[in-house]
Each structure stands twice: as C-alpha cells, then as structure tokens.
Image (cartoon, rainbow over all chains, first blue to last red):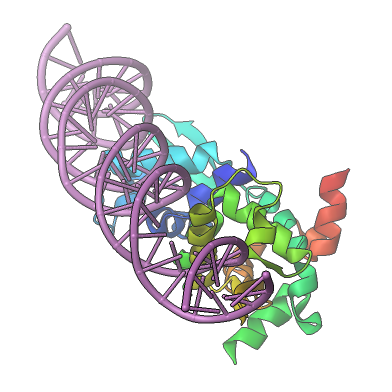
Length: 104
Length: 104
DNA sequence: GAATCAGATAAGTATCTGCTTATGTATTGA
DNA sequence: TCAATACATAAGCAGATACTTATCTGATTC
C-alpha cells in the first residue's frame, strides 16, 4: 500500500491491462482472463500484486472472487504528481484540459 | 518515451528521488550525487533511464551535463490517470483539493 | 461423499534490473 | 601536452520479477 508498491504494480503492462479491464466493472479472475493469453496462476499472481498495492479490492462470492478497482487506489500517485504541478503548463492544471490538449 | 517507459522509470525509488531533486532545479550528475550513497556509474545509468523515458532533459555545458525535469514528461501519466477519474471522489477532481483532502 | 470448479500457492526457471569495477571519451586547466 | 575532471559505457554478477507446471484449498453440484 505504499507509493512504491503502486508504481511497481503499474510498471507491468499486463497489470495495467488488468486494471483497465476492471475499471469498466468488477470481474472475477476467470472472466478477467478472457481475451488474454495468460495462465491462471499468472493472473492470480498479478491480482495479488495489484491487491497488495491497494489498487484493487476483492470480495469472495462462493467459489468466485470478484475483483474491482479500489476507488482510492490511485490517490497516492495523484498526490505524488501534485508535487510536480509546477512543471505542467499552467493551462492544463485541470486534467480534463490536459487530455483535450494532448489529443490535438 | 512510452507510457511503459515512464512507469518503469518511476518504479525505482532511487530514480524518483533523483527526479524530485531535479524538480527543485537543474543539476549536473555530480551535484545530484551529493547526499546520496550511489556510485557515479549508477547515477549515470539512472539518468539514462529517466532521459529515455522523457522525464528529464540534458544539456552539455563543457564537461558538465546539466539535467533538468522535462516539463512535459509527466503528461503521459497524467493522461493515463484521467481514464480512471470516474473512480476518484467527485470532490477531488482537482488535484489541489485532493492534496488538501489527503493531508487531513 | 466424490467429482468438479475457482482460485491460491509452491517450486523451478529464464529473463530483467540495478549494482559493481574497469575502461573509454571529451573537456579543462596547469 | 599532460594530468585531472565529468560523464558514459562495457562487462559481469546477485537479486528481483514474471512466467511455467504441479499441487493445494475451499465451495459447489451430482
């Protein structure tokens, strides 16, 4: 649950992909594997890393385990980024505007 | 210069420390080492990773090399984070408010 | 209760990472 | 011009990481 845990968890592209899938709604581990070429243990291990980083929450439902994004999981990184706001262009202090600007 | 490069570069605590030092002003590689127990080659290698991720900019000045934060270096991550804004509490859409909230 | 299923865990392995020491390349100044 | 300085690069190594196969736990269903 530290800043370091979060950065390390997100440093892996497979875990970012899993995280993005969960952002569209909670899923169990098997459903998460659909469309991904990844073994069951590998998925379980990735989910453990995301869980230990505080990025996802788990909920046992019978023999299924539902995973979902922890709404507060990204706050530590958001806070980290505020330290460097001075380096962002003034006009894109607001992330909405940043996104628009980058899409141009 | 990819999203993956940036996350991987920031996943190392030593590199985040270097990045934070540079956020207070440009420095050359030797000055950066002051106060850190890190060899000269290790510093050089870390700086190369940060540079290749687009997080810092370099400028030769005689036999010194000045390093400074790339103002646009964090934009890819900022953009990445906007994908998950739905999971942030509405009140902290603005990072300023997020910071205040977390400091309570 | 036995078979099945979801998922976690263990153990082994190939690859990656961050460090080290040694050396190379410019630049500077005596 | 020659030594010193600032930094980069090469090569090697220990530990970390992400994967694999095999096995285990617990819940479900027949």
